[in-house]
Image (tube, rainbow, N blue to C red):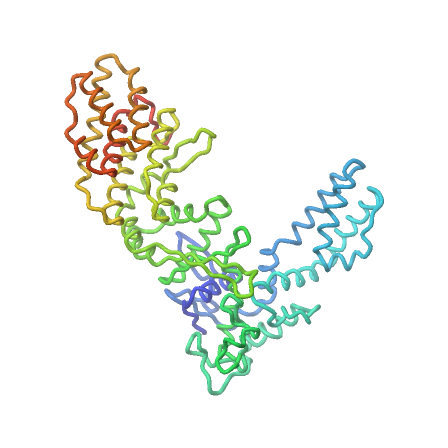
Amino acid sequence: MERIYLNDWLYNAGIVGFLRINSHLYYVKDKKLFSKDENLLKIGDNYIEIDREIFDGFTDRFFDYAFNLYGRYNARLEEFKKFLENLNNETFESIDKDFKNIIKNFTLLKNKLGDIKAKNSQELKDLIEKAIRILKHDKEEFLESDVQIFLRSFNGQKSFLNKTITKDRKKKFYEDFEEPLKTDNNQKDKKLTCVICGERPAKKDTNYDTGFSPVFGLNKDAVNFAWNFNTKLPSCDICEVIYFCYFAGLTELNGKYYFVNLDDSVESLMLANNLFKEELEKSPENPFIDFFTEYLLRIKKSQAKYTLSNINFLETELKETLPKVFSFNIDYKTAEFIEENQENLKSLSKSFFILPDETRVYILTEFLNLILKKDLNYGLLYKIFKSSTQDKAYVSNYNLQRLMIMYLLYKQKVGGKEMDLEEKSLWAMYMQGKNLLERLKDRDAENKIQSIAYKLLNALKIGDANQFMDVMMRVHMAYDLEVPSLLIKVLQDKDNFYLLGYSFLNGLLGKENKLQEENQ
């Protein structure tokens, strides 16, 4: 059995990719990974262990996975079928143009079709039908060609990816990888050990352009960066093929590729990347925050601080000679804050408000977005309360108050700001708002709630503490209520002003303004 330990992020992406390509050998149950055949694959804590028999049939699995990921073949078939459905005299020119644009960038199909001129709808129909027949009849050839084109961006021109290889690409892959890996028949360097795993003997004469990614700048064109102009790199055949699989561990978004890197276990690494892929398919607009939101809700509280502070997102662009790699992660203080407030955060998981354009905005997602960007401002609270005055906020008063307490705790613990406010101060101000609400009801003045709320909300929007104080004093005097002593703190500090102001407004609005529960 060969052990493959977690390593650098690209190697980890290779492990995820290798497992995805061999997905027939494991299953997921209760958010855990289980091997179906431990004689071939064992999933340890920070490693996987494989028998070389796992490579039996690896060529077909590798090509099929890359082919399905590329997606060009099936997409073109569907497009051509649509062309046939829509083809008539009125649409001939536009379909003819679209068809030729596709063929122009599809070299193999273009060569097989030959002349693609069409004078009328019937000739174009015959041409499209011919293209469909060719695609279906020569699918295996298109599969090999498409995989070669797709993977060159990831792995340069190693093995079957070399431009000189124009046919029998699977055969070349089988000869270079599957057969020698399965039989342990690669020639080994008698002196050198693999620099990656540090355990297995190095494969003889491994070059930068064999088994490594351009993301690392490791290719023969980068010889000037190599020590003594030597492009040899001692690597074993197992580590080489793991790097070769990294493409399958990445997730594509708008032409860029992403990887969620964790160093605590293979299981968490695999599940995190699968989750990110799922969230991207559900919500391509904002998958990062949706991922963190869902991931937070899934992991155990005891794991949250450690796991979140050790998670990294890697973004790479493959079009450049030496692609850029960007990384961002959650700092320890933010991870600690998330861990300590996990229950409060979970309470907001179903809460949302609706914007004037009818967009639904989830409060937990927006809040996490702000703290991950280190830009926790009070605009979110304004939007929630603005929506609530229009009966479009689906969050309970209690959970909204918990949100404001998290604002306070974040400012203090992550922002490092010294504030003379406590949680009880926010609850006290909330109760003052409730008291005013009850007095207005007693005086049959419920119709005044909306007007008072708008005036206070406008003062909070523009950050005018004096205007807020003026409204508060007038209202309390008009209804024979004592002016809250906490208002003194409003004038001392902007954060005090916002947190106390919104807490008061939360109490004033209450259910009487139809601030709605999340589960409705």
